[in-house]
Length: 529
Image (cartoon, rainbow, N blue to C red; front, side):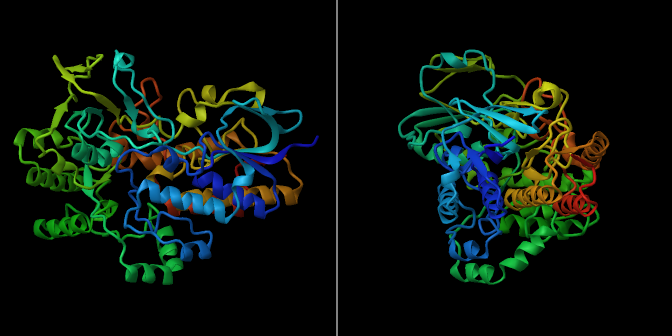
């Protein structure tokens, strides 16, 4: 039976674009379906004030094309959302990707036809296509979480979600604004909104750790040096757990003398960025070592925030690194502004939203605009919004009702010829997403080429291999402190979501080695038919 495409790709972010490029070059036909009106994925939707990548721009970029690396000019150490979106559009144009992308089209259903060994895919526009393979590239943080707060629909003013921000500019000048949440998007947007708003009230559910970005324009000489040695930088990054080229201090924090330890923390703090957690090698392995880093950050909050009660409320109580570490520009300083109020609701949830504001802790707060900085249904949310059905008509949402299980974070038992780029069970959100995406895309493209050479039309993981990998993912999480708190890594921000540590925390090098072993052993753990 003929099929419309070798592969249907879901999503035109960095994963979907590169997947299309790779399949084309191997002679496969592919069609990308994208819900937005343009490419960029995360960077298409997340347009909130201050949206910026927390990985340095020269590293948060594709490495598959040396020409692309050399021709693109990043302007800042940490690129803004508009600049990253321009980059995504440049890539789409440079490699002529748009002709195989259908925009403003969502996949509604994908059902595996066991008789014909193909996927039948339907869109929300009524399109029906068949494909030998379905490859999801929907992003790990692409399904905004709107909490079920009583009365939310009653608010009469405009309500914005940081994960689905309007494309036109939002001006808060002269407005009173309420913000719910203090995660990454809030930490980036609050300083900017505070400079515009007449008054900003921040409702903090959980205090978060953040380190300064010390963002700045890129020095041309630094850029020249990077471009002259890009291959070496990428290779070094590939050997680091997070896939980011920064130096990890092999010493133990608790075993280091106090003064020397303080100097190391200060040096990392002064440099800025996520490398702070590489100050010592055991910050996520030892409670005592972790406490030294947490106490250091708390001391910084006391130094910056003038009001002692506000400073105390802003201090995270959990260990540093178990939730996503944020990178900021002027976040804590913002709470020194006379037009900013912090309301700590960690011990008592919001009672209800009203027509003109909300009620919390027995007090009414009024504002003109409401901003929900309430994060995402991470890693599985976007996948499970699509009606994906494998063998026997079993739905993926039912298969994962007790938590996601996959083989390598790439494939699922009972769902032949389905690949999930940066799916649960892969390093994804614990790494620099771009090299993780490229590694997954390369694995999938090479796999499809191998199947074609073998004359094989179906690939599916076997139960034993999947269970073994799920065990590895769980064991890796259990030896670190990262799995010890309620975070979106375990789905704790979504009521009713199974509590499973979803990403693979063993590091990018160990993950790459595992994938390479699978390939070397003729796709060990897979059944080919």
